Amino acid sequence: MIKRNSRVLVFFGLLFAAVLAVGTVFSGSLAVAAGSWGLSFQEDGTPPTGNTSATALRAYNAAYIGDDSEKTIYLTFDSGYENGCTSQILDILKAHGVPAAFFLVGTYIEQNEELVRRMVEEGHIVGNHTYSHPDMASVEDPAAFRRELSRVEAAFQAATGQEMERYYRPPRGIYSESNLTMAKELGYKTVFWSLAYVDWERDDQPTAEEAFSKLIPRIHNGAVVLLHSTSTTNAAILDELLTRWEEMGYTFAPISELFEKAAS
Image (cartoon, rainbow, N blue to C red; front, top):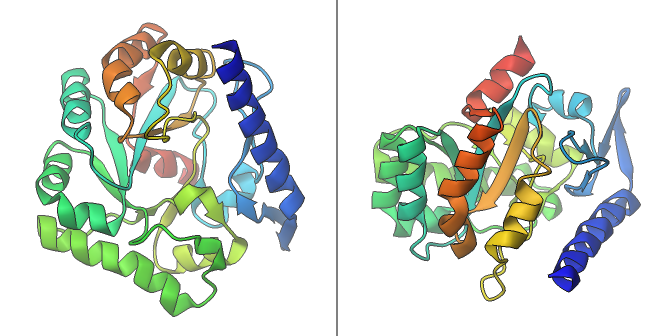
């Protein structure tokens, strides 16, 4: 376990260093990093620092964390494909009365319409994770950027008969100032995260102990938590995870409140 935990810590350290190395672009007095979203954790239980500040992101209707004076968690899941875990996750969320946001790619929606309808019917937000999960920072043409999002909107409307709520998460957290601007111009709010761990490797899933070692001590006020619904570990531990967070005094809110509070 020590070896694996060291690998994970090295991964996040290198990721953050790489992000900082990419450079920074400026908009007025705001600095917006270009590259992959990264976090620096200083102390367990306290909010991490993002490679772009919450203040800078706010100018683009983007956020990675909520009010750090409130014991509130914003739970989100990314989904690129379905492997049988989502129904179990939805069951657990329903049992706890916890709202979540599911950021889905277009092909997921087309292939799993019943699950998508269930997400909506049970009060969860379905967000836009692009149609084909590309590196969006390399998409400089506004028309191409718009197509990646509009194809997801069309798939969602075909599956549910409803218009998609405009929340966007860049694949792999790769973004640029122009991406944030284009998303805002399309009416989207961009959602990053303040807590995640290496849960996406299909053939190398973390143990429950490894997952808890990251998700319990690092939880913090206003946390936007990113989990992958393709993780068999997440499906197995979610009931206990939510229970432990609840016992720590945390409550859960939809990501809509994340932006409502920022605007007030």
